[in-house]
Image 1 (cartoon, one colour):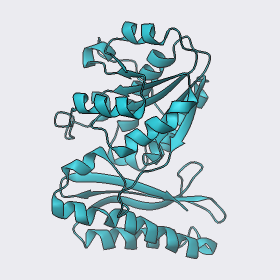
Image 2 (cartoon, one colour; image 1 turned 120 degrees about the vertical axis):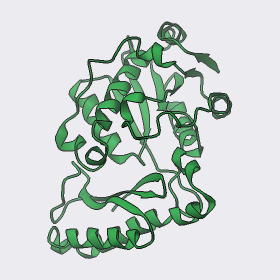
Image 3 (cartoon, helix red, strand yellow; image 1 turned 180 degrees about the horizontal axis):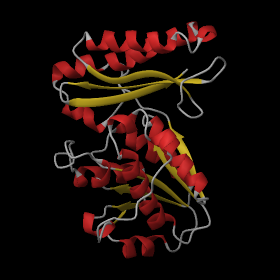
Image 4 (tube, one colour; image 1 turned 180 degrees about the vertical axis):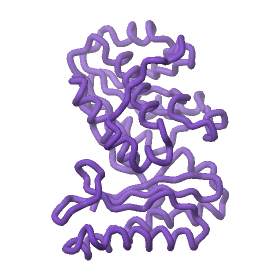
Length: 282
């Protein structure tokens, strides 16, 4: 596996390849990331992964400075998973000057749910992903990028970005990887204490229960959905969580559902100091 840090070195490494497959990450890799790498491997003629902790998608009070940087261990995992090129830029490599040009996503999709509780988050995500796409796919007729479905809203925002900018990139969703007890794998799970780790599975359990109730009430949507959501939030809060949202939405645009819509349940809640997210399609 080749490790490169600068844009010229990355483009030189990819010059002989026509269809990269790309997995962008922020590092601190776990089995969920590695599943995306293995999924991406047969989708191109060279497999590229990136590791970059993107300042633009962190709010001032969030964990940018403390986010784990584990490049050496991550590189070993990627090498074992079959990665061909690791792009690990420094901040000055990707942002050599203040990033005053930014990608502003559609607020109807990006200012709800995660965007409501993390204002500007998706602007930061879209901006860095666009820069990474330009770095990896510049001059290529086509390519593939693989993103985890655990970040459901992020995947939708990025698909819209690719569509509206007519980028020659296929976005592929990787299924959410889970621990044996059902907890969605996340780099931030490492922040949990032992007791919190045992409790953390309750978020996925609450969402599964909400999904079952939504199916049972499908004939009455949207009249009953608000009550179902409130009950789910209250039950989780009673266990010591601080829920941001547990909600039922339609898959097509994450707006409140109507009768007959395909549904997804999504949740975000803080356990101690750790904020976790999860989702299930219904």
